[in-house]
Amino acid sequence: MRILLVEDETSIANFIREGLEEEGFAIDVANNGKTGLQMAIDNLAEYDVVLLDWMLPGLNGIEICRAIRKESKEIPVIFLTAKDTTDDAVFGLEAGANDYIRKPFAFEELLARIRVLMRNKQGEGSVFRCGTIELNVESHRVTKKGKTVELTQKEFSLLEFLMRNKGKVSRRTRIIEKVWDIHFDYDNSVIDVYINFLRKKLDEPGSTSFIETIRGVGYRINDEE
Amino acid sequence: MRILLVEDETSIANFIREGLEEEGFAIDVANNGKTGLQMAIDNLAEYDVVLLDWMLPGLNGIEICRAIRKESKEIPVIFLTAKDTTDDAVFGLEAGANDYIRKPFAFEELLARIRVLMRNKQGEGSVFRCGTIELNVESHRVTKKGKTVELTQKEFSLLEFLMRNKGKVSRRTRIIEKVWDIHFDYDNSVIDVYINFLRKKLDEPGSTSFIETIRGVGYRINDEE
DNA sequence: ACCATCCTTAAAATTGCCTTAAAACCGGCG
DNA sequence: CGCCGGTTTTAAGGCAATTTTAAGGATGGT
Image (cartoon, rainbow over all chains, first blue to last red; front, top):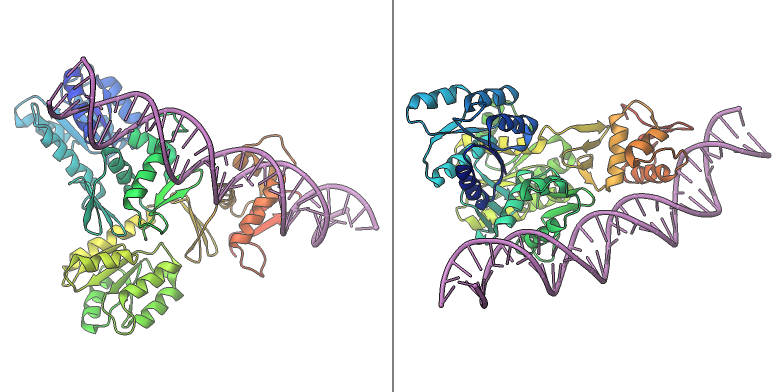
């Protein structure tokens, strides 16, 4: 899950980035409005959420938001505003934002709002299922036959990505980009290792894996099993 | 959108059928396990969703589900179960169901789950078709009469190329260039071999191949088979 | 009939994934 | 600070599926 953060104050930007990275998101930071807009437009399809500071040097958040909305009405946008009046929030929402949050904010709140938007995005409750395996994004928990299975952060991210693309192939390069935030590395065996971890923890021993490997392409979790 | 409902209690069956018909689905009802299985197997490719009652006279839901899964891993199956423990749900999921719902259920909920599964299924991915053969680029999967056929990467690429040019001739040199990324090699018999692979895996034995060879030029997949 | 072209098969070469183990990293704690 | 446990990354050998090569047989056009 990839998030674009547009924020000029580096201290705040770092705080947010670190917090979100701990939660398993991949974050790109733009520290001024112009590059922020650039990054947003260039890779619209890449981002799952955009966090926009209200006051920015160069180009302010509202204009960026409008510009983004002109390109896509899908991507959730959350405003970060220091101002205190609700009027500003209204401006933000009118510009097409999905939500706003006032600085200073509790990190948990930001997290909660991000999760809500991501859930809305796909419409259904944020639990994915494959056979007896269930992954709950909200509670960050995975169960198999009702019993919870402990997964590390990366394992969880990988499984989540595969689950979100259930039925489709997840190409190796896309996985590396989305889960590890590594670009231009077309031969990275980290994936293999983590696929192996997941299989060890979740497969029914002695039967074919719930993660199918498509040689030369990537992996796929099927609807069945 | 066509749905198969396997349910022995006619009152429930009618309730569900009417509800779904109002929503614009086409429903076929089987009121016992045996005919349910029969209908499922006969017209696998026809149905978009299968609703399976848990307790059925003759053949129970689990067995039907297994049998369906043996034929196709594509079709979404939802269990209707009266039982209350999660264990039963687990059984259903183990048999290959995609989701389960407990009776009595709110009709809205059933509807929501059906919609989720249907959305997952089609995913608006570009699919190419030729007769009973379907190629889905997103899921990187090829099916024939609803049953998936395993193709390697090169086989898939070649078929995709031919499909994209359905009705037109794909010249050998163009195929070599696009699929193998080889240039200036006008005598490469790799194509022959791979055409052969595709035919073996996808042709109806005993009739003319769905890939027509145009001697001295290349190959062509025709619009109708 | 003959030649070019394509089909078929089998074996050789290659690739890419799996697995394992060990190294690097990281946060907490004495 | 240095150590410890857990997590993540790197590395490498083995192995099996895939891809390519090669060669003899079949076929069709002229």
